[in-house]
Length: 102
Length: 102
Image (cartoon, rainbow over all chains, first blue to last red; front, side, top):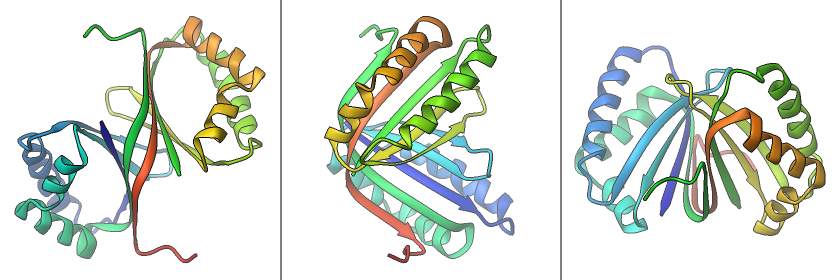
């Protein structure tokens, strides 16, 4: 399994536009083969993190190159984010408590 | 680099005790060789995530087996967390915008 950790800080100017694009992109991600889910969190200092999970690196690659996602990435860089860090990670251990029913 | 993604939900009964133990454990982590940092975030639904970074899997192993951390882990399971999920992940790609000065 692949975990993608995307930390970001938003500029304030495009908050409404960003919210719309982000909602659309989350919807689109959900239709990507091998996509397993996404969840977003915020830190006390305003930094945000979205954690998404994929079955394989190939699924991440396909999602990264989706044309509509590509456009959103460009907007993100130009308009929405003052900074971000994206880490693509391979899961080597995965523990749950209580143990999840499979 | 290793990223550890620890998602959890807290029980309410031990909130004060938990806060003290968690603060102590974060301090202790900072003294662990190979530990690179930790940051915590919360989701709108109350789920929390702590993301920590380590240089190597060996550093993660040493931190996991630190006696005081072991005690805290046992308390976490018994008292503090209604559920958690811990994923130990190897970073395969790491992008920043703007590019970080090294």
